[in-house]
Amino acid sequence: MNLTLAHVLIMSATLLIVIGGGIYAARAVKTAEGYSLGGRSSGAVMVAGSIAGTVVGGGATIGTAQLAYSAGLSAWWFTLGSGIAFIIMGLFYAGKLRMTGLETIPQYLQKNYGKKTAGLAGIISSIGILFSAVASCLPGIQMISAIFGTSIYISAIFLIILVACYVFFGGMKSAGVGGLLKMVVIWISLFAAGVSAFLFLHQMPAEEFNVYFPEAFWCSMVGMGIESALYNLFSMIVGILCTQTYVQCIFSAMTPRTAKIGAFLAAAIVIPVGLPSVAIGMYMHAFEPGVLPVLVLPIYLIEHQPVWLGGIALGGLILSLVGSIGGLSLGIGTMLTRDIIGKIWKIPEKKNLMVLRSLVVAVMAFAACIALCNMESQVLFWNYMSMALRGCGVFLPLTAAIFAVGKISNNGVFYSMLISTLVPLLWTILGNPPISPLFIGLGISGMMFLIIKVKTY
Image 1 (cartoon, helix red, strand yellow):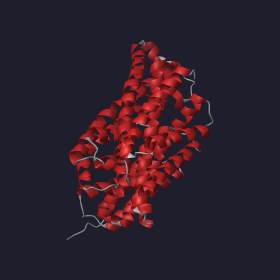
Image 2 (tube, one colour):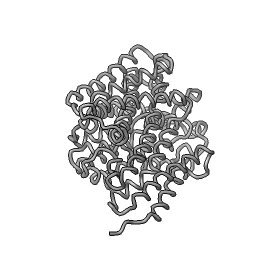
Image 3 (cartoon, one colour):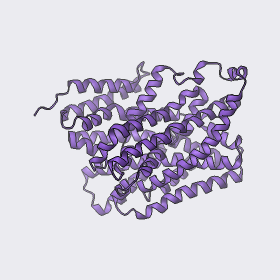
């Protein structure tokens, strides 16, 4: 890549402004609840910033461009599915969740199904969210390595330091402020870069366009098959609706109404973000077919855009990865502190904040280690697998806890969650299943819910 000193300086200034804003906001954080929920004082815009700042990570930017490079428009499903999920969350889930005054999904499940089910939900959710963090670590490590010429191991350490600066000091408060600033940077720079790629593709003569994109799937949302499209959509919906990180943003809202509006604003921010990455991925397929797919987006920004725009957009890309890893790690750290470690060992209130911060950093480091062992894997593979793992076991129990309060057998829910998670996971490990693991898991969960004994009073 033809990276110049100007690129590096502009990118560094962008990083400093956004991360510095998050650190400045962290001054008010004094307690563990203030760290994990921002003192439950977030307005709708701050809720939206926290949500969008986390979901718009490696999958929504670099991963979407990577997939569009080989599959075209169908790569948009990640951000489109995310936005649809947040609309559903705003309509049906956000208000009811915020009214409880709780902090984590396992706490909500414990209230309805008991401690055993809550502990299992914490483990399943933590593993699933971890895979999403891996999805942002992969392009982050490769991008830093390609830009600065460092080894992947040094790049991983540098990435962890950036993430720690983003979220370590202020938690949800830093994630909210940083998320808002990050989305401003990404919206302006990525859309400006994407418009030029789209216009170039749009103005290509039909004969030339057909040479580069001969198959019909390039311009179809179901180009990879209807089952694949449905899998991508449903995995995003069920995964997001039962992800601690996004529900935690809902819990941080001032009121239930604020939580709803924040979810709708997040959808409006997230849905369009994937389109410029799709246009850039298809552009690079036509004009630079030999590049490493995971570096399609950064190479385009460096070599096909003005230096000032490329530098700002590169900073935005790194921020998208940093914010996503930070927000996801915060979600896992909160569940581990409140619902797993905190249940085994009684943590003194004064040490809660220190333990939570330490766990957030440990999760970041673990995600980076997994990424280092899987550097050749597809970014969106980890995202979709993450959403499916969370959704198979937790989605229906959480939905039933919200809309059928106190009517479902505790033990039945525990075994439903366990089996509907393990079966699709083993199915995937043992071979390439003809049916999506997500549909297998949801099918098992649904059938078990039909036969679970409903409580009678």
